[in-house]
Length: 325
Image (cartoon, helix red, strand yellow):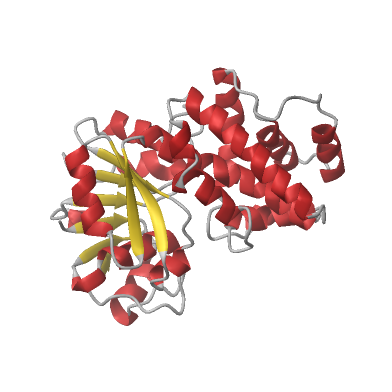
């Protein structure tokens, strides 16, 4: 199965590296000329993944016509740009493996819902899990969820992408897999705030646990299964991104916790902190679904400029309740 990757950022490049294992030819589409030049001339994405040698079988291009011979497309663009990119991609009936994590602003649609709307004849899968791109690209051990309702396609994709250090776990729960990835980005911002404000490890652990409860409530309300949310694409990804400065969302939260404004922190970023865009959309989607998500509401307040102390006081003064509610 010949693979093309749409999106030349760190994660797209890492997945191209995964797909190119064993010398398999992979086409990597990127918007940035610097990326295509660097990958083709030096076998390195010096802009987004510097210092990591890439397989010489990866060929980068800025022309979508060059992916015409691919048998499956890994779509690795930020969720808020997914619609505009998919309107340009010649999909036809080829499988779309969606690797973005977020909810579309305005429509409150999950990424798979956007893809099905634009390309109803294309099979859809979701790849999600606890993954830092630089570790995947270096070949360090990683496990992910590959969700697809078509059992046969899921098995073929899993076999194509799996390797000695990249383990794929199958699921038919597409909604659950993508909801975990979207919500954890927002919760990672909250955990970064705890770190930046010096609120302690107890607070972070409590926030991860209560955030996971929010994720599960919302995921079930939107059609996901609790066991999916308790797996790699939910709890696994949550633990990773809530525990390391390597997470763009966590590092954004650290800055907010130190009193910096969201506008200041986001202004100079070349890479996208998906949680900043997802938080207000998730808040509205939760309201529409009748789901209580206080941590998500707190993150929105912080992004909108409410002081950290005020937001923390509001969370701690909420009425007492049973834990598993």
